Length: 122
Image (tube, rainbow, N blue to C red; front, side, top):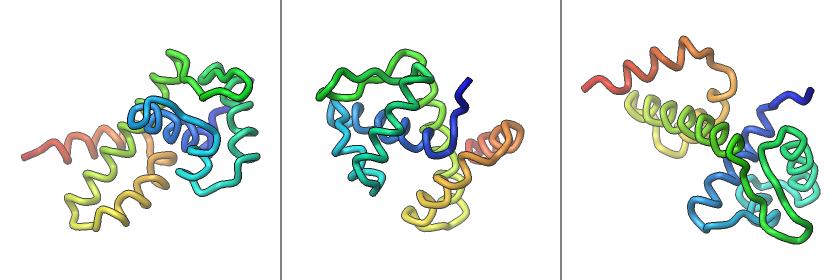
């Protein structure tokens, strides 16, 4: 059984966003988005395939499976919530984005629920 690592969550999130914005995600675009080298992306895609989160035919775009879309959506929602929370505290968007990326992997479901409740308050 393969585990979903922080790094793989970041790759999945990047693929999800690229597909939403550009309609497709290529290895080169994922590498550029995450500021990593293409062989790192290829390795991550291999791991994401084992987890049945993505599919990719040789030399074609990366596609999310239904499971991959669900997981990526969850990761993105956590990131968006944390960024909103930090910005509500007065943190700049750039810093909030960077910090949300680190926090999204380590906070418990309970903490995320409390942040959601707090952030959604008028």
